[in-house]
Length: 241
Image (tube, rainbow, N blue to C red; front, side):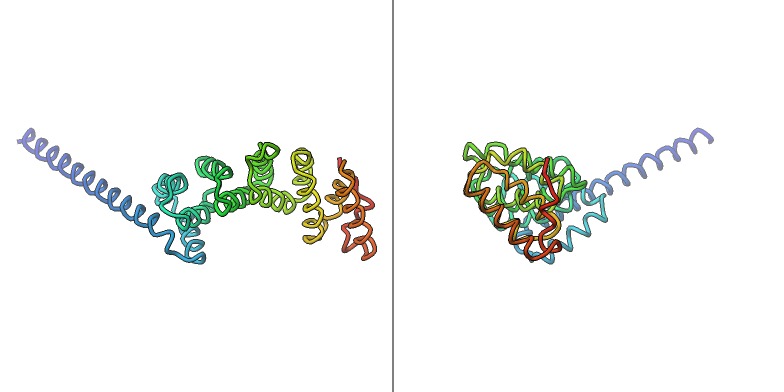
């Protein structure tokens, strides 16, 4: 009787475990299907909806782990420009995942500027800032060979300017790769942005080897100083390394 009871209990336990595993497998299959449908519908969602879904996924890591592989597929093999644009936007919620970072970094060389630019803009939001600065610097590799689009350069300059003094130091390492026209544009961009970082950036550009760039930066410094330290970021007192 004891043997029979033990056998019955063992059978019930095995059957129960099997049913549980089947149910768990079905739920996983169902969840994967919902994730695929979600990725396929990205192009039909508004920017506000995408941002809302990104926040929800950050709070649900159990679901996010199924979303990430599908999101990487959408970044690599999108069905449309709208889908990849939406995928890039929602990727900003997962910048701490190495796979997403690598997928976005590869897109910097995409021939479509409306893809390459937003991908680099997303990378500029990585935390900590030192990580974003290092990646932005790498995005300029090949710029002097013409393999980096203007949209990427725009976003790198914008990101490094926004990241302050450490961003300026990184830009100084790559400044010679940019054309004189681009460096001249950078003078205007820095002035337009203003703020406390303007002075150090203009001081760096005032030492440019191109006379037009140097003159434009020096003129911008004089104009900023004429408006007072608050407007100029005190460029006279700044010396970039």
